[in-house]
Length: 337
Image 1 (cartoon, helix red, strand yellow):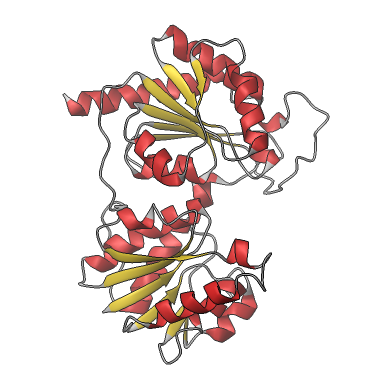
Image 2: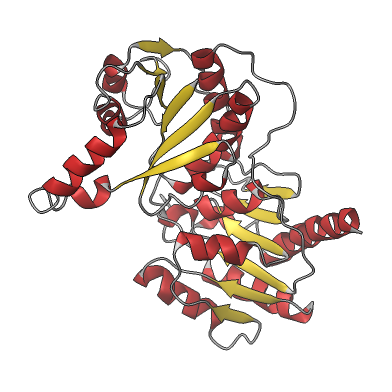
């Protein structure tokens, strides 16, 4: 069956969809994908994805008149292939609306009890129930299995991405996040960079906007083992991932991508719930806060006056993160020998 996936953003959500594609590909299904223009590089790396349609809703909605021709060209491009089915794996009104652009092609998705935005389910030709308490990866695998008529495999999760193995002495620190409540304190990052340096490694710090650039510079200031990277596209960051020995990060799409590539990864969770969105990978360690208010699932910390801020990271210091990452890197190296 020739299937179109609609999973436009965010990067972490796209990562969570990849194992479902691997499952379905084993049953002979092939896929195209609709993703936001900033994220197309990742789904394109899955061998069962033939083509990624680059959509720009985030940009279009701010320039409706100026982008009218671009929008119409996108719709025409989307209608050219002969799809048997559209799976809206995002579950939002905007993604359901995109699905309806393929007139005559059945669109399926989650039912009202399972979806994030209930109104979106009215746009589907078929709706499926998937319990909300499951991990995001398991939820998407279940949706695809029901939509395409097979049982979810009992085997381990396979993201369909090439495993990364190298002897580099560089590490990546994914410090950026859209939620301030998920940001590991700068002081912890600085101490981690110093530990990294004492162990003979270098910590590379990417950034995506001005705020993250300032944070990266605050981490690296006076720390010889920390290097602020230049501005990079997702494609360039994925290439950088292929050349490092490990990753430390907050709950962000890039940290999830690192784990999906099989890299040694240590991730810190405070405000968010690792039971629902923990990175999955053979060499992944998740450190979750045990503070009474965690996980709060709030974008802004309710106790901003406490130190460190957010205070849920007081019990996840640099020593714990470095010890966890070292363990994963050691296990990764032992397998490579």
